[in-house]
Length: 213
Image 1 (tube, rainbow, N blue to C red):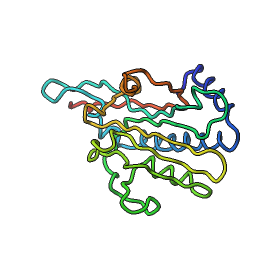
Image 2 (image 1 turned 120 degrees about the horizontal axis):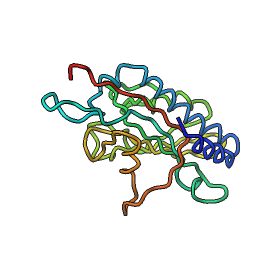
Image 3 (image 1 turned 45 degrees about the horizontal axis):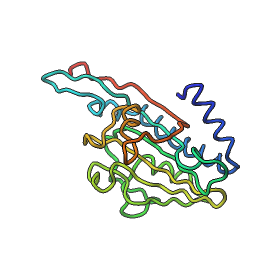
Image 4 (image 1 turned 30 degrees about the vertical axis):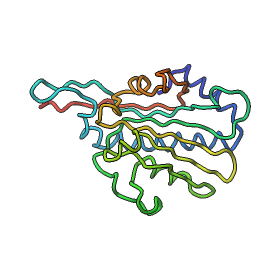
C-alpha cells in the first residue's frame, strides 16, 4: 500500500545495501506482512473494534481509526552517507489481539511473553541468525516499563546487525494511536520535533462497528 513515490524511494534505498543485507531487511518486511495477513483474516480485528472507535452505547459509537502495520527505515542509513555499522528499522502497529500474550513458545525461551511478531521473526530468522530481545515486549500490564516499545536485535552470521524498534498501540491514551497518521504525530523527538522515517511497507484494513452498537 505504498504510494508510487514511496515505493520508488524504498527501492532506491534498497539499492544502497549489499547482499545479504537487503535480503534480510526484506525478510523483516515479509515477517510483518505474514502477521498482518493473519490478523486481517482473523476475527480478532472485529472483536476489538472498540480500539478504533470512540463513544459508548449511550451516546453512540463512531469509528475513528484504522488498523495498520508499517515498516520504516530510520537512523543512519536514512540520514547519513556511506556504509553504516548496522541497520535501524521501525515496526509500528495498532493491532489488538484477543489473546496470546501469555502463551510462551518453546523457541522463545522461558519467561518471554508470546507476541505474534516476535514469534514470526523467530520463525523467519532461524539458521544462521540469533535474536535478542532487549527489555520486555509491550503488553497491557507493563506499559510503565516499556513505553509501548521493544528493541529486537537480529544478529546474522553474515551481513549487518538489524536493530528493530517495535512499537505497539495500547488502550492507555498516552500510548494509543488509532491510525498511522496519529502514530507519526505522537512518535516525535525529545523536543517534539518530527523524526525522519522512510516507509518500506504498509498494510491496513477497515474495521466494522457491529450494527447493534
